[in-house]
Length: 413
Image (cartoon, rainbow, N blue to C red; front, side, top):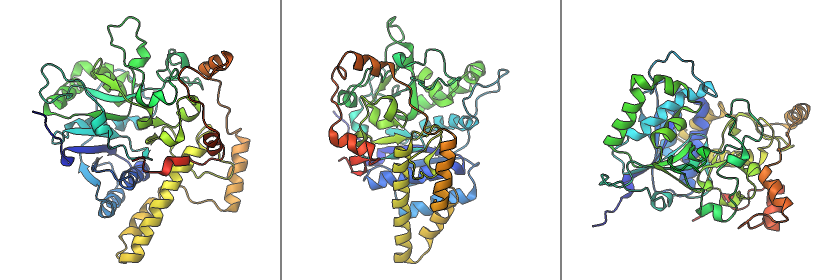
């Protein structure tokens, strides 16, 4: 007999350990509400979170009933004699993401990083992802994960990246619209001698999973084993490297639109369409740290003005709604949460500030030109856009050139 999963058995999950990510969590919760998600957002918080940030979450939960605060404790790997190889110190906190698997009272969860914002409803992902069922798996899919491939193009040749992080090894390079939405590159089995090893790497910004006590015990046992210390210390991206290894041969890929990494917009143009983005992942520098000036430059290489502008549009909507609610109820809760958050985001630019920021960007040589993608050169050299590719329409090109997000603000339902 088929079983029915109720709304109360599903949840979005995120992690908040420091105030610098509070604007991201607030806008993540707001975009879930704006696009009419039926499921709550469980915010895992640690004792490192300042009282003011916890106060802001509590106040916001009175406006947004999807937001649920779930205190937890940090998860740290066992001591190792080897130095860690983290890309950034902030990644130390991401080990605690694994505590998402301890939420065993839910049937299905989708984890979303705190620097993600939704631009379409994607509740259907709970139903559309088919996690394989093992022979000894009575619940189905509890030993499996669904996620997105890691983009390993490394077009800017960052020194930290492994040598095989090149466009020709990226799982997204041969994908094109519209097939890319429903036919992501498969994950090759480790026994496949022809399988590209980089296609087995996942991005931990979004993943679908079915928590269980058995799975959580297995994850914790693997993580806390003294024999794992040196292996964990070698990870550059703690949580996602662990997940890729723990779920080796037990994860399936999903469409790029559910974890649309902002650099894909100009690294994978054949695949990307603004209006198809469901969840936008603001990796590296965060949009709330700097306003977008009149030159449209944003991001550490200056290429992300469009996508950062989308986030500021969401922010302005959220602030406007909270201020309207202050006028309506007079309780001051909306005013207080806005005041806390305004202390954590970049201040608006006046005319002089805009001019100074534009001058600074120009002196820094921003935006930096996007390096040519070998696959794009191959396609143009062959006289075609690529097999299965639908070229961008004139309207789509005009919208992107004019920094307009097109249909990205719609519900997508």
